[in-house]
Amino acid sequence: MAEGNRIISGIKLERLFRRALLALALLMTFRTFQFFPGMAPVQEVWFVLCFLATLFLYPFWKLQAGLRFSRFEAYLLLVIAFGTFLAAWRAQDVFGQPLLYGILAQRAMVLTAVLLVVVIALQRGTVRIADLEAAFLWLCWSTFALYSAMRLMLNPANFAGYGVGFVTEPMPGDPPGFKLPGYFILFGVFYYAILGMRTRRARNYLAAAVLFPVTISGSGRGLTVCVAATLLYFLYRIRGIKRAFVAAAKGAVVAAVLFGVLYAIAPAAFSARAAGFGDAFAAVVTGSATQDVSANARIFETLSALPYIQQHPLLGNGVVSNQWQGGSAGALGSYFYPADIGVIGVVYSYGILGLLLYLFQYRFAWIAARKLTDCDRNPLLDATKAFILYSALYSLETGTFVWNAELTLFFIALLIALAAQTKPSNLSDTGSGSVCSLQRPALSA
Image (tube, rainbow, N blue to C red):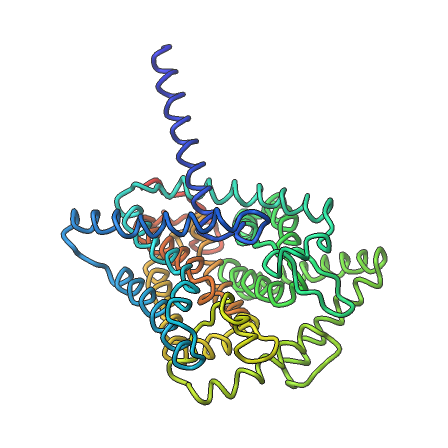
């Protein structure tokens, strides 16, 4: 009996250690703390480790497997080559930036390269999907606690010297705020919200509602709209059009009550946020300046980018390093960040061909999703599909699928692995038609 207890304890410790390593790897791969004070050198070390893993571990595993490449692996290799060398060459050709600066500016592409290792690790069972799920949820709640504490206890203005990667750009009449990557928390929002839709348990909805506000940095307008659209889509898929409409109406009533409470507590702040949504909508529809400084900045950045897009529509203008003559703003002679203007910024940097190449990643997600049926479902799979849909929507504004390609491609790789491992669940008749019972297939590879 004592020997059996020691074995069980050893297994639990091994599992805990494996999940802790996975959580650390995910934090570094998603660049969660890259711009935090003192973390830049640590992130650079992670870039080097990812490069070494791709250079030595991936070829070794491929040789063992007989040098057979999946289509997704071939696509990743193409994205890495295009995103690194072509972007560097275009910046040299258009702006005269030395080639080495362009290559180093794209060093984050090694995070995409390490996905080659992740793909093989998932196939071999070296990385267990059940451990990934546990790591994601742990990171969701731990980053939620950290970010909440930072916003309650720290003043962002005191950290303005650390740059716009850590705090938002100060705007007239708009105090700076922390820029905190909320990818893991957003994953948790989708995880619990969709689980609530399937189980109808209030505690799941409550968890999602508690998590969501912490994901918002700056105005959060686009993020809020895209998260709402994603959840409404899944509500429709799960409940059907009639039940989804009823549930959405109930949610709207609850939201209206909450908005009323917020307005009573802080009328000035609530009115300013509501006006911000209106100004952003007006800027998108009319293309003219509004009272919103952030929306106006994006209009001016778009106007700055359009002449360069017209001159180099197919291959773009490349990526200018922030370490070379003031970066993109110095090259164009005005305030300019390609990531600010979403798809337009992608076309400016990578051209139409680059946009199409990066968009093709969603083709792999579509193929994997079509292999699944409505009966193939578990919370991890639901959250993964929701995050991919959200990233596609939010990328229209931010270009996340390009500027953080390692993020979207990771979830697509995970969806492919889940589609390969998830088995159909049994149908059960509940009296209102055949539906699938909520199941959690064996995900431990």
